[in-house]
Image 1 (tube, helix red, strand yellow):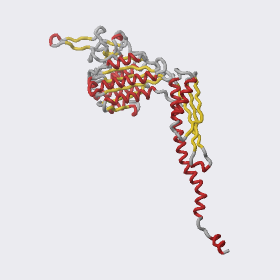
Image 2 (image 1 turned 90 degrees about the horizontal axis):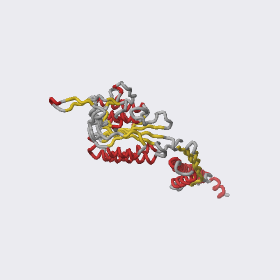
Image 3 (image 1 turned 90 degrees about the vertical axis):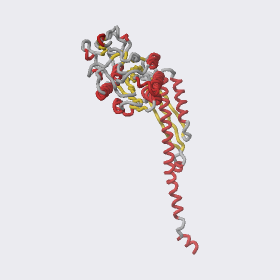
Image 4 (image 1 turned 135 degrees about the vertical axis):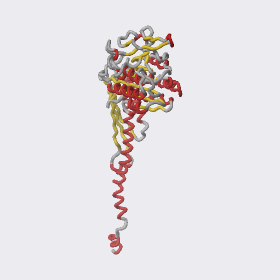
Length: 413
């Protein structure tokens, strides 16, 4: 009886017993945290797999049957999801609407729990969905490229050509329909240059002069259609920074046909999806002359605007159309038709960029080693659309990044 009494009064071991009762929910809560993290990781992986499948189906929808697209989508989902060893893919659906030109991809899976099992949760469900569209978005892009003499240094022109050709290839590969992506190339120095086939255009004026000879034989020569080699100088202010319509008989609105300050300046290529012609223009670029960024920006804008002088562009109100400009230079403004100071020229460039953005053009700007960084940063539509290049070899990756950014088929949800 004495032993039984002592046993009844003994309180030793209570903590261990209580801990035993408390351990189950504590372990369950800790397991829930761990398993939630595993489920979140699986959900992220599944999201990426579904997004990739949706984009792939949209990209290839015009080239493959529905059955082929579903097979490709399944393979892509499984391949991307298989890296998450803690999760199992349970099912997926791929719905293709060729009338609306949309694809919907959904998928679901499960993650087996570990410690959370003690609370009765054996699995965690994960799911994802995405929708994408194809063949409906169109792009117009102006490549406004510095072709001044300084581009001959530090391998800049060589790298610019390579980068531009890479961009053209990416854009060509991204195009799934005729004229879905069209590009213009605007090489600039102090002037821009057009093919002489434009000589009779009503928006040109022939009143620019130059002095030739010296001493008693010195004379003034006025440009004519017969002597014009395609070069054009700045329009009269304020039209030099806008795409305001040229009005017949109103000189201030017309484009001055001029003697070529740089006889080897490559003629620009208006908007086209002729990839061979675009490549030819890029390959023909030659560094020559001084810098007038304003005229480059103005003609980049003109190539993206409907009506004269270049009528190829679609109206800005066209559904699902986005217009872009890539403006690249490697130096400060040095010369325009008016003999302005660099400060005034910079103001004109800023005004031209502002006009382009007001017209709905998304502007990327690139400074190659030298130039007014503040001016060019302000030209870009967003800070993230401005690039600083300290070595010409960086142009390739930057052009590829921009090309992929503006050409990819984006998710719609």
